[in-house]
Image (cartoon, rainbow, N blue to C red; front, top):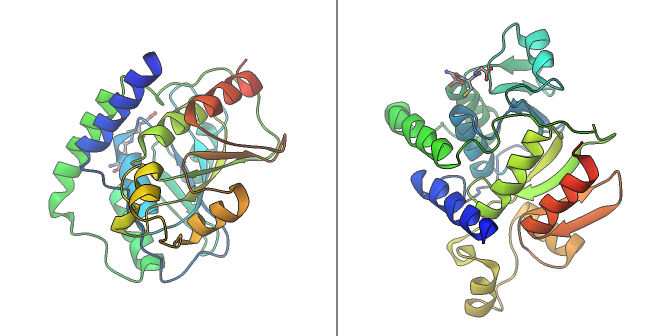
Length: 251
Ligand SMILES: N[C@@H](CCC(=O)N[C@@H](CS)C(=O)NCC(=O)O)C(=O)O
């Protein structure tokens, strides 16, 4: 019951952002080396950057920096000089930057081959992202004690996915770094849960960079899908993934 309510609440958070961070369009250029993003789930500005990652179909190494976190917060001060999030490092160009609007602009121009969406709606974006964070009642805001993994985990997810959000929030609270595999939808036929797609469009071939990869690796296209290279585990289902993360990494 608690889990169902939480999924419902996560759906509300996505609705407050009018489901931005759902559809993906292939980038003009794929970065050769993974982008690095220092951020936390409950941060409204970070959410705007994560939406852009989905919409640009870009993967990124996520270094979670929740309040009270000690694993990656100091690194941001060391690299950029101040404690502010999001903070992007692009090892392909040597660029690093604060400010969500600048990061989004940079990602669109450098990798999207197109201009970023106009900033006219920026106040609306920021305020609805704040409302979405408030709706989540502090999930993905504060660090909890955890064991550090040897290698980053890997998560197939798209920003607005209500189930994926619950996994990302826990990864964030446990300060577990992960390679975010952007798994945005490739067309309107992909909208809705996997079961709807399978019923309405059973013969539609799977499309999209990570979607085809997910099908080949795990046998179906559903997010979240977590891979833990430290233990060899690979699993679907947000509830099972959360239970796994808690039993493996929480102290
Ligand atoms: N204008 C900045 C605002 C960023 C900002 O205020 N971030 C907050 C988190 S939402 C922060 O870094 N707070 C310091 C902290 O969490 O310790 C942007 O758009 O990136």
